[in-house]
Image (cartoon, rainbow, N blue to C red; front, side):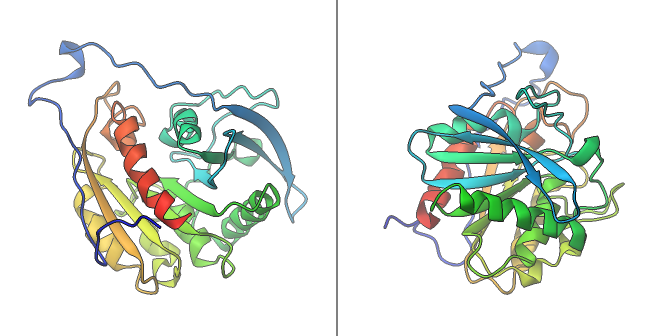
Length: 274
């Protein structure tokens, strides 16, 4: 099996930086990548408390693995039964077609009744919700199941992985993780990262200016996964912006403009662990 030539902890850099001083008003806006996957279906997953969770399942023709994508922000993507998405800018939502092109199915949960997940992602209750999603993913086929959380969603990924049953997930990918306490009053460090035993990839963008997700915290995040013997850091650089907010999905915080390069690099790690 192909493997990265890494030791326990290695940093990669993708040199995709913009020229200094180049801002949104003095360059053309880049196009948002296609947001539709190859084959998309909507499921309503019954939960243990009697509620139902709507899921978007996007699958390629030949599947190498299933990635449960945990969006940032409030977690509400506005998914309708028809498949229409009202809030599709988030990195893990708008790139599902690109993941499919690498052979990975994408499973994206919405929130129940448009609930705001801020402050709830590190709770035992939400860990059980993700556990139900993992069980559902395993029913779809024999492929390995991964968790990928971005920004606030990284808290949910850490929490779920910390409480996951043995061998239920093949690995965890954390992108632009919330490591500084902000308005949600939770970070990845409050979600028991020291309990994670599966392989972990921590991805951080040197160009990220989001105040609750500083890229320089990537090594500290990785070091907190003390129970895992397979932890790596992937540093990237670059991105464009369409927003005045540094924590926006359409900024370096959401890999806007460098999606292809970032997904290529993450996919190499996935391939080595699938």
